[in-house]
Amino acid sequence: MTLFQGVRCGPAGAIPEPSRGRRVTNILAFRALAILFWLAIPACSASSSHWVTTWACGVQLTEPHNLPPVALASNTLRQFVHTTLGGKTVRVRFSNAYGTEPVTINAAHIALAKGKGSAGSGEIAPGTDTKLSFAGAHSVVIPPGKEAVSDPVDFSLPRLTNLAISIYFGQAPAKTVTGHPGSRTTSFIVPENAVSSPSLPEATKTTRWYIIAGVDVLADEPSCAVVTLGDSITDGRGSTTDGNDRWPDNLARRLATNPPTANVAVVNMGIGGNAVLRGGLGPPATARFERDVLGQCGVRYLIVFEGVNDIGNVPDVDAPAIVTNLINAYTEFATKAKARGIRPYIATITPFGGNNYYTAAREAARQSVNTWIRTNTVYDSVIDFDAVVRDPANPERLLPAYDTGDHLHLSPAGYKAMADAIDLKLFAH
View 1 (tube, rainbow, N blue to C red):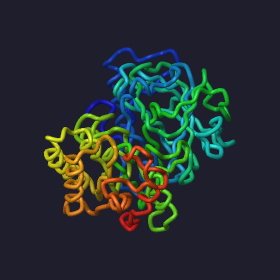
View 2: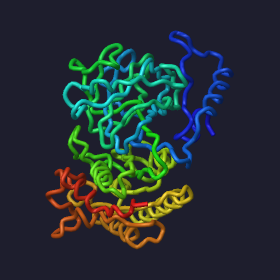
View 3: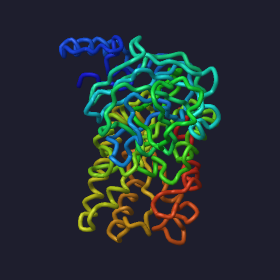
């Protein structure tokens, strides 16, 4: 186990800064304190109340063209996330997994969004601004490659709400920034300390998330989470900025308004451009499975919906081999999930006819993979997204009403159709 890492649901990943302007310089003392801090935080448990992840994102090294438009260092960054499961006790996870320099958080606050929250001026609801702490301190230094988890804080978080996370940075990397480029959500950057400001009308705006990795709530034992592991179609390319209308968002709304499943959170682990096996953007699914699926809190269900980027980027001559390799990876995912008591479901790969991914050999590979998915005995159930969104008159293509125009990504109507097709009985535990 690497120092600061381990079970992501439990141990915090960094040492709280003892006081402003003072740093731990002795590496042996630093490590000893880290171990004590790690041991002080309990892991996710099966007690009557336990941590459940209500929101998270798959973090990656931010590509140069997606870096913050202004420096994070010495500035305030306010970001909005759409949480799914509510609770009265909350904690937030911050990540410097891909940074090559420490990240110093001088202050971090959470608040409920005012109205839609992530649009306009980044307003927060009056009376909800709440300080976060880290082992009792209001600042924390996150070493390169590590993460920090805030102390639990009393906070009334409704289900299906926009939560503002405001960070006032000290030191922060300029080029090796840990983030999630496909936020489809507006973030706000302003000079100096503005974590408690009711609105940020003069902010520089960006549609990216940086440093934040997850939000957990303390929930009753029946509460749990489903993780959606995927690529840009799960990440929501083609959805509405600040609209929270990706297919996992729509699934979360359906679950929350259906009494037998109202205590199931949805954790979207889609990464745009991601691949299952190798290449693509962000760590491939085989490399991030432990972190992004098994490392979330309270996970009881998994939906695997990924593979189109593997198929779409393979040379035609290698298309038959990619089928075998994907099936092997899918089987590994199901085996790992079941070993942790997680019920795994898998979805068919949707059409890409008309996109530059399309060749006859790649389409044959997609059909072969989907045939295996529909007939496999490894997963507990199959979600046939292909059947839901394909054009009946041309099954190699998306239905025009669901096509954004690139013949790969879906429109908000398409994402709603996908979520609506999922049998909620799969999550009635």
